[in-house]
Image (tube, rainbow, N blue to C red; front, side):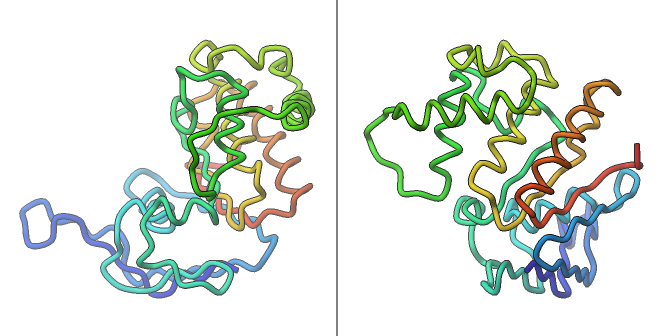
Length: 210
């Protein structure tokens, strides 16, 4: 499903700040696989996820998702294949928008944007049920601004948004590292529940196993 073939990336080549971040990296995940990459700072974990997500072009190699070569596709065109949750709970959501508005945007990921804005009742009901499953009380705060949520609530919402359209690949970038142990355990449990239920192919990076 995911094939990373001999990918290399060097930042600032030919300068005093040259840094070889990835060298001939190969990684293969079958549909439904859950892989965890463990390593310290500077090991290239986030660089690997950024390369797959298209944050920057790679110097050489190929990245293939579900049989399609996406190596040269820009980040926004890879969004229909990939869901991602970042380490920082402030990323992945729009703080100035309501919870239901954030979910509506996630539901349209990969679609051609239009000028109309509406939230059909059926979609509203679906969002309510999905939020209720998080067991954080967010289903009763759908019109609240996301910026008012706690870090754990926001990260759980980001996880829900990233998996709302069942992406072909889910990238988890140390997504519990910035949370307190109790909240991190809850978000990890939610992650396991969603990934198992939807059989998502998942690549997670972490400093250590909790």
